[in-house]
Image (cartoon, rainbow, N blue to C red; front, side, top):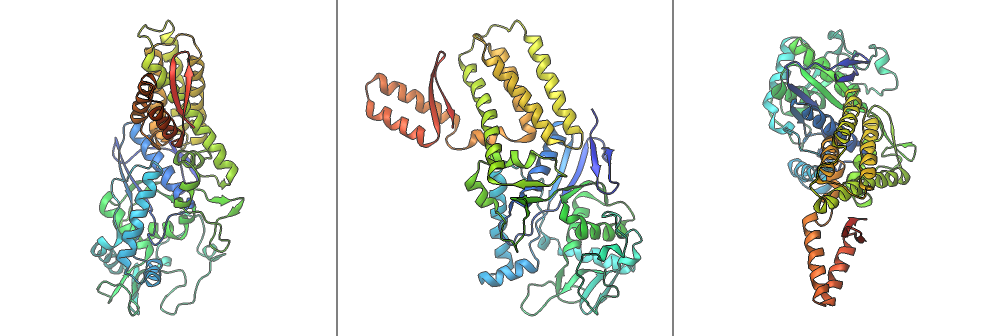
Length: 468
């Protein structure tokens, strides 16, 4: 199987070939840390986590960089509102971001560089652009000359005139051209600043990613990703300034995920319909949120409402129950070999191949989830047999866990609430309490398990439990 990725730059699916065999350099634009992230931010966080996991599962060594924008107009305004400093605002919301992604089962990036730790690299980058005449100083600011970079607009596939359609451009006499964008912003009184060859100021938004990506991944990345809204102007400007400096392509493959709508309306501050991840984690299981995000192709719009999240929750519970049933039966199963061991093994291998084929087709997670459900169905059919073996059960467990190592749905469900080992220990203690006619302790354990959403069931194989 060969991985194919839809490249925003070419508007075509292309065979994935990294610059260096066996290694992937991947940069995804991270949050501006002035507030809690919303579900629109969560979509690329979850999706690119799956991309990274899949690449690693197929043998690649992935260097995955996600930046933090920790100085910006929004942080300055937030610091004023909270009567604190910009660094304190950044620390607060970086901690909140890390807590949110951990709650969503997202693996931490290889590195999360911060803008404020890379001011010398940013200044050096801008100086080199000025020296090459791609940038100019004006009134304490420094701007990039968009008309000097002939390919400006190639990522968003617009020409220079079309770039202005639907985009509000403020008249600024400091610019040579209305389309020029800022690389360095002169500090206003009372604002956070750094000294530079052009005076006190701070970086513009676009330059930070170019400078940090270059430092940690070199002139050309394998994959550059982010939300669809970053395609223009942010990524377009990154292309212009990076390629003007290096003379090389900034990225071999550009990936952009689609928007999230709320009840069929675009999520926006003006409509007041945004939902933070903090709020969402109180309303839905983390696994259900991941399932919802992966249930549509990443380039397609995604509509959030109570029904879609409820459906997602029902689906992940079905998967979790299947794995729970397999593990429960494993503890009491016999060790004899299955007569049709080879047939079971072949079917699981076939489903895993189907999963891989869908992921290789531009990370088609909806169809990859369908393959996972096929394995769940096969496992449930196996569980209906009067006699199952450790050998057969373990095959299904390994198959489910191998697929889920990429999607990240089942572990989040199982780690919620009491750990499995604690539940097992409480059940053993309750059985012993009942034997000793210690009804008070038995009832106390029963109530504790009920509070944790644990359902006890008597089965022909003995007492077992499952999560609601």
